[in-house]
Length: 340
Figure 1: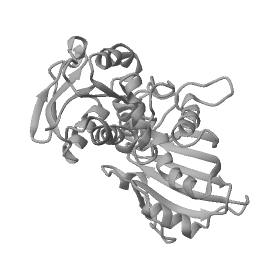
Figure 2: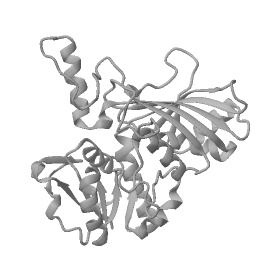
Figure 3: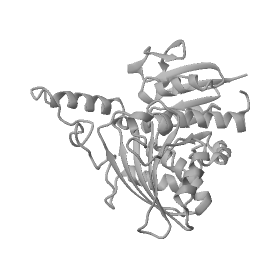
Figure 4: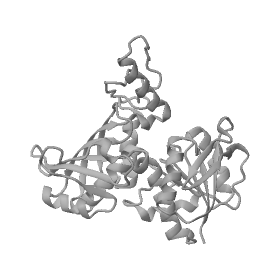
C-alpha cells in the first residue's frame, strides 16, 4: 500500500525535479496529482513513463491525500499550505515561509531525522535553503566528533537557485556577449551575471548581510546546534546548476584531516573525492543529476588551533530542494505514516 501524493508547483524547475526523484527512488505512490497556478493549467509534466496534466491549485481539495510537496513560493504557500494541512494532508514545503517557525520542523534527513516527530503541531514540515542543506550534511558528522564552534562559509551559487528566469538570463546574456547588437540588461539579477559574479543574493538586511546569508546562519543553528556561530558570504556565479561552498570550520577539539576524511566517507549522503592532484576534486558541473553532496579539498587550517577547510558541492535542484523534500517524505512514511 502506497501514498496519495500531491505536487504543488509541478511545472517549475523544482516541481519537475521532485517528479523525477519520486520516480527514480521508487517512492511508493498509489496516486499522484500535479497542481499549478491557473496560467499553467493543463501543462503536461512527466512522472516516469506517465504524462500528467496539471490541475488548478486554487480549487483543489486536499482531503484524503497523504503528502503534498510544495514548490510554489512563500506567497502561494501562505494561502494553500494551511488548507492542505487542515484537510489532513502533510505539507513538505520548499519555500522559506515556515523554516523559522518553532512549531514547524526544519529537516535534513541525514542530520536531524528525529525532528520529524514535530510535524503534527501544524501538519507542515519545512525544507531548508539550498545552500544550508548541503553544508549541514557535511557539518553534522564532524560536529558529532569534535564539536563545531564556528563556521565561515563563502558560497558560489548557481543561477538555477533564482528559478527558470535566472537560467534564461545567464543564457541570454552569454549569447549577447558574442552578439553585442543584442544587448540583454540585467532583470533577474542586480548586475550582469554572464562572465561575472555578484556578491548579493536576496535582500540586504540592517547589519549589511543579505537574507540568504542570514538564512544560512539561522537554519544551521536550528538544524544542527544553536551554539554554532556561522558567518556567510553568498555569491551568485555564472553556473547553470550546482552550488559550491568553501567552508572553514573551527572545532572545540582537534580533528586531524585524515580522520575527518574518513568520517565524511562513512557519513550518509556524502561522497568524498579528495586527491591532491589536477582534477582530484569535484566541480559543480560534475555534480548535476547526482543525489550526493560531494566533499573535496579537506585540509588543516594552521591559522587557528582546531581548524579545517573543505570544499562542498551539490546539485541545488536536488539536495538543495527536490531531493531533500522527497527524503523527508520517505522519512515521514517510514517513521510516522507507515503505509509504504
